[in-house]
Amino acid sequence: MSNPKDFTKTKLSMSVMNAIQHRRSVRDYTSQAIGEKVIRTLLDAAVHAPTAMHEEPWSFAVIQDKKLLDRLSESAKKLVRNEAQGSDTDRAKHTLHVVDKPDFHVFYNADTLIVIFSKLQGAFVVADCWLAAENLLLAACAQGLGTCVIGFAVSALNTPEWKRELKIPAEMTAIAPMIVGVPAGVTPPVPRKPPEILSWL
Image: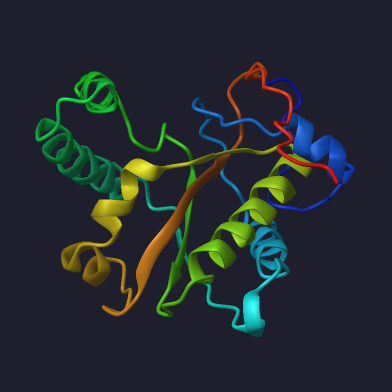
């Protein structure tokens, strides 16, 4: 990237529709660090999401330690591989094809992992946490940052061992792990189907 932005600061500069239409799942990052002020802005965006019954069920973990992320990646790959080996579906085969690549890193070498946890149970808790995640993803896009939801990390993050290491209370459940970082290049758009409207009365 020429003339990289200073991501220790924060500045929102994109309309909501532009952010929605330009957000991409980025899988290639530079080593440029994301500053605390920017991360706090993203977390603030997250907690302004809609929430059923005003429960605000979300809690957050921010991980920027590179060695820790490397170890978590290896642990996640092992668990995902074990889960996929027990299935003969096309999805399982694709998963094994991805995680068995020697240079595959679950977090794509991004600088920051943000995980949304919750200790609450209920019909809308998971939905609330994903609404918070979408707010965070869009706020990051508005600042020129890349993001990607990392489903492969969920199983590892919910093990007792990783909860202890990350100082996460045992009763918490990891719901939405997301990487955030400075994109190493341009991620092209993925075509979307038009909305399927079942009824308009």
